[in-house]
Amino acid sequence: MSQLRYEKLHPEFGASLRGIDLGKPLTPDVIQAIDAAIDRYSFVCFPDQSMDDDRQLALTRQFGNPEPSHTSVGKIEYFGTIGNVQKDGTVLGSSHKKTIFLTGNNMWHSDASFKPVPAFLSIMCAYETPAEGGTTMFVSLRAAYDRLSPERKAELHPLIAIHDYVYSRSKVAPDAVSPELAASLPPVRQRLVRTNPATGARNLFLGSHVREIEGMSRAAGRVLIDQLTEAAIQPEHIYVHAWQPGDVVLWDNRCLLHAGSGYDADRHRRYMRQTRVSGTCSTLEEVG
Image (cartoon, rainbow, N blue to C red; front, side, top):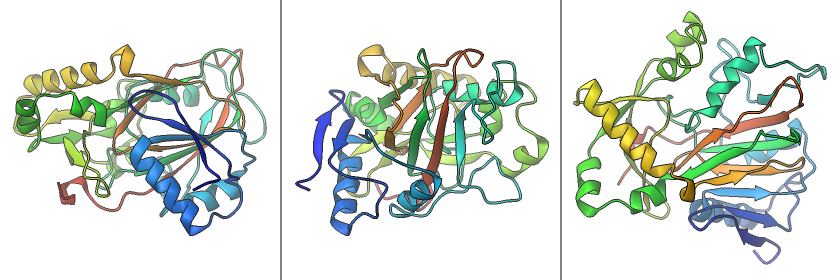
């Protein structure tokens, strides 16, 4: 689209887009252009936006079905707060259980990869951001796949990984996941290699939720997972996003990993709101 101005953010992925107000309904051709940008860049940031929850949910619906939060057992909630500022304006410190729980986001992960149908897009709106820390790191697992040898790609293509929410969140604290929540999120099988249906581009599908590789010993599977992850997150492959109030970011969970850098919740305020767009099918049903 002529009104969209693109600025690349990293050699491997990511773009900043200007020239559009996301708070207003988007025309079909603009939605198509943004979809194409997501397929091409995986991470798209729209700075200087004026948003609220109603506008964000409307924006989310324009790209698919909003995904209910996995932590809201027994009710439907589409929003998650990333940060320590509560709805009433109060601030939670570093020692609060909610703050500690959110440190799980500091591990490299793909949002909701532990669901039978993993999330497609995450949409984050930034309102208050800390003066120090609070950045988010991103890497492209498409670029990581492209760096592999043909022999390695052939070896990995048929493999199935087991994604387990309880496994990953138990690293934060032994009681981080309630029995009720754990029962609602049993381990799921996901392809280790995914294919973008629009472009045919392939990528690894990794993250902190991956517990093991089906058909391999736990030890051998962990070696493989850790090797692939370490290669993907080398410094030269990382884009660090320093959030600014007014940022609206859409990222593709099918092919990106991200991790928070942490911040001092006793000294700084952070308030960002996240919604997600649901995927369309299990990775096991994807063609590719």
